[in-house]
Image (cartoon, rainbow, N blue to C red):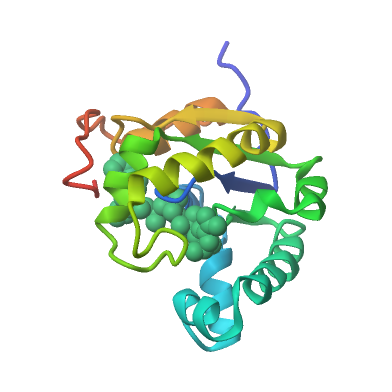
Length: 193
Ligand SMILES: Nc1ncnc2c1ncn2[C@@H]1O[C@H](COP(=O)(O)OP(=O)(O)O)[C@@H](O)[C@H]1O
Ligand SMILES: O=C(O)C1=C[C@@H](OP(=O)(O)O)[C@@H](O)[C@H](O)C1
Ligand SMILES: [Mg+2]
């Protein structure tokens, strides 16, 4: 007899370092599951009426973190897929709000994450203007224990294309995926697929 399909959680939150693929995978997963998708950073930009680098520059990081706290706390209580910003887990109130949720940590090495964010230019103020790899190592040292603490699932995304990450995630959530298998390996240079 076929196994019953498990009930999907109402809310699935994605966490992980910059370049882990939270925004990319969140959108794909939502499409695949027919669920709403919100990227907290995009919503902050819409509400502030300016891009994140400009918020950092004009208003400062504390102002961004305040918007991030408000927006994240609002979103993690709603049904859908929610992709957080990489630094959201630094806030204890956000960590507390994640305690009862399904939280997927997209894990990535500093090496792969640096290569991936290198492709998207200067859209991440914390990584702009310095050595991306060493900044990434420092951020990860501070944050890895927190990603571990808040997450219910961990996916190792190193060397996996986005399509393969989504497949892995669906399998971990117990969802049958009838889509055709695609090549699994990725060198981070081609990015999408
Ligand atoms: N698994 C992956 N393999 C290779 N490139 C990826 C993967 N996931 C995302 N990317 C690419 O890396 C960059 C950063 O992805 P993004 O989704 O913005 O990460 P995050 O939101 O976690 O910072 C984008 O150019 C995206 O296309
Ligand atoms: O690591 C961080 O502190 C940040 C990560 C960014 O999101 P991504 O993780 O989606 O890049 C964005 O929220 C902001 O630039 C700050
Ligand atoms: Mg993102």
